[in-house]
Image 1 (tube, helix red, strand yellow):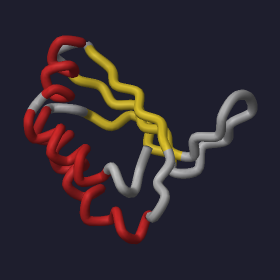
Image 2 (cartoon, one colour; image 1 turned 90 degrees about the vertical axis):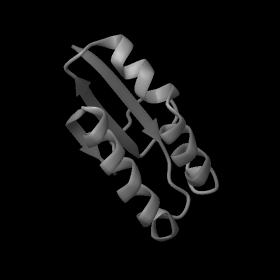
Image 3 (cartoon, helix red, strand yellow; image 1 turned 180 degrees about the vertical axis):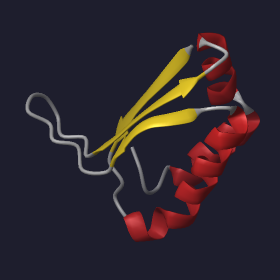
Image 4 (cartoon, rainbow, N blue to C red; image 1 turned 120 degrees about the vertical axis):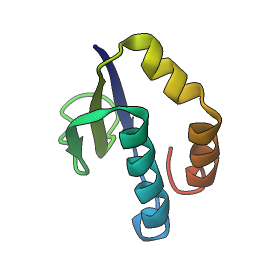
Length: 85
């Protein structure tokens, strides 16, 4: 198994709704299973990051890296850049 842990903030959730649909579809097509998706993470130490996602990929770490480095994810990431960190 391979895992991806994503944390971040969305500056404008309304503006990014369509892009979030794209990333959700992409992760399904890439083979991920979402284990945790929390839009209001309770952070007790460190910098507040209200979004936390933990996803599992059945083919391991290299499959996770391949998805991250794919042209499709890089395209989606660029579209989301104005709304998220």
